[in-house]
Length: 276
Image (cartoon, rainbow, N blue to C red; front, side):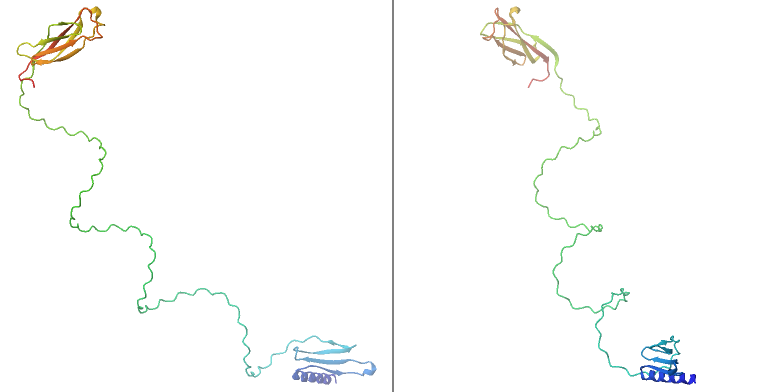
C-alpha cells in the first residue's frame, strides 16, 4: 500500500514538471482523527531544477529532504527556429595596438610618373668633406702677360750666407811704377815775429825730391812767458812741389813779451811721377 502511495505522488510531481510549475503532491497514511498525521510528500520544481521527497508534516511546514544526485542527461532536443536579429549593441572600446607585422616583400617597380612641378630651392647644405686629390690634368696654354704690378715694400735683410769657397789665385799683375823713395824731413829756418804783425817761414826739399807734407812749430822767445804767448797759425800749405810755407800772427789776447818765433818743416821723398 505504501508503494502505491509513493507512486501516485511521483506521478503528480512529474505532471507538474511537464506543465512548468512548482508542484507539491502528498499522500497520507494513517487516520488524522487519531493523531496519525504521517504524510509523504513529493516536490518537483522545473523553475529551480530539482525534485525531492519530504517527510512527515510537523506543525505548519514540511521537513525538506536532501537534494538527490542529478540524473543522466536526456537526449538532445530538436533545434528550435532561429530567433529574430537582436538590436546592435554599442561599439566596444578600441583594443590596444598590436605589434608591427613583418615587412612584406618589395613589390615590382611602378611606371615612372609624369614630371612634377619644380619645388622651391632648398636651403644650402653643409659643406662636405674635401675629396681626394684628383689626377693632374694637362698643362694649359700660357696666358697673356698681365700688367706690371705695384712694387712691394723692401723686404727684410736676409741672414748672412755661409763663407764661400776661396777662388783660385789670380794672375800676377804687371809691375807698377816705382813708388816714393829716399824719405827725408827738412826743418826750415825760424823767423821771429812781433805783436800784431804776420811772420812767414818756409822749408825747402833737397834737389830732386818733392814735398809730401809739412807742418810748423811756434814758440815764445823767452820760455818763461810761454803760458802767456798764444800765436795761431794763419796758414800751413805746400807753396810749390818742393816747399812748405807757414804764416802766424800774435793776437790781442796774447803777451809774448820778448817776442815769438815760427818755424816750418817739410817731408820730402824721391818720386817717379809728378804729384797730382
